[in-house]
Length: 86
Image (cartoon, rainbow, N blue to C red; front, top):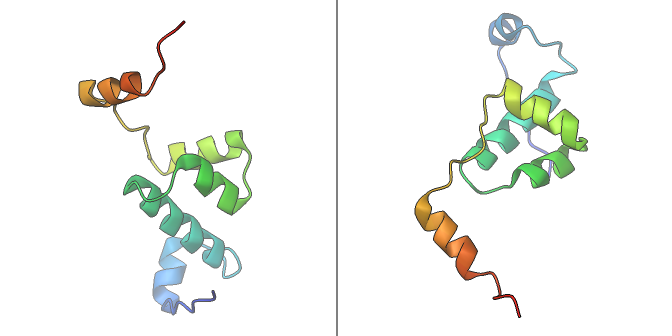
């Protein structure tokens, strides 16, 4: 799918991105936002952007996308899915 995004020249200049890097930056922003909303995993974002694990971690850190904090309820769900040892 191709999407055309019109960015006014003053906005583009103020952001400091070169014209050729702005489409990639917009895609990164979209994917990071979807990840922060829980719609994409960090691994899927890395895969879609063609990034290695370390490159993706740098992107997430620069974007201030932190790992979700697990709650006690999350731990209970995780533990319930484990099979008991024989």
